[in-house]
Length: 140
Image (cartoon, rainbow, N blue to C red):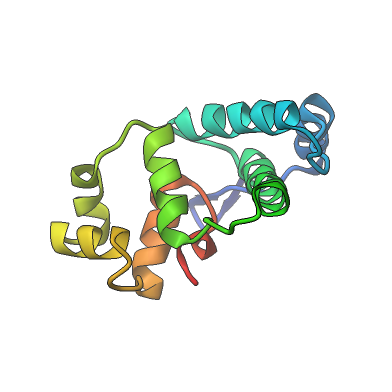
């Protein structure tokens, strides 16, 4: 962490990220066993109340590797903003009610999950901050 103008700003530490890469060894997923292994890591990271910028970078990389594997081997692209949100909710044992404060209303939560509306940039940013992931996961 660095101090700037009296505010604490998180900085990305390449040495820490290198250590995480060495520990988890992310790579192109070729088998169900590898996919399951990386899914467990993603769930473990999502279960943490706070994650570092380096852990967030690892999380984003693993999510993309998992999506790539599932797109190639399951032959259906079920990954969309709604399914990503459902996956994150399941990983943290959350319900729609837990997202009301994040998105503003139960109506917005329900309509988004049923694919009746798209989220605004601000709503996607709020979800990204809440789940410690890139807000782009919640946009088309």
